[in-house]
Image (cartoon, rainbow, N blue to C red; front, side, top):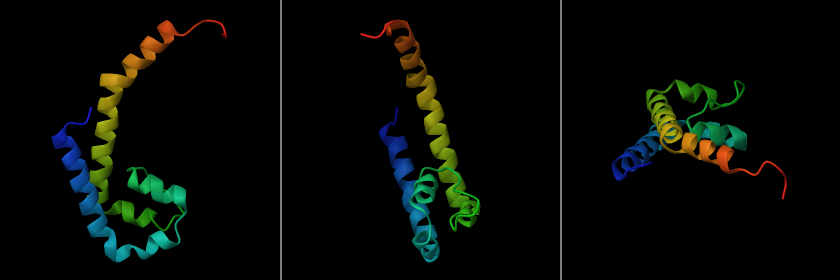
Length: 95
C-alpha cells in the first residue's frame, strides 16, 4: 500500500523525470501511445520507439526501480492474499 511518503516519492520522481526529459520531449510526438504508457509506467518501450533512448537516463531508471518495488510490495502484501482468497471462495461451477 502506498503511504503518503511513498506516494510523495513517486510523484517527486515523476516530476523529476518529466523535467529531466523536457528537452527531449520531441521524441514523444512520434511515439506510439503504448510506448508512452510503458515509458511512464517504468516499463521498456518497444526497441524501435523513439523513447527507447530515454530509458538510459538515470532518473528514468530510478523511476522504473521505484515502480517495480511498489508493485512487488503490492503483490506480497495484497495481491497474493486476494488470489488465495479468490481461489478458495470461487464457485466450482458457473452460476
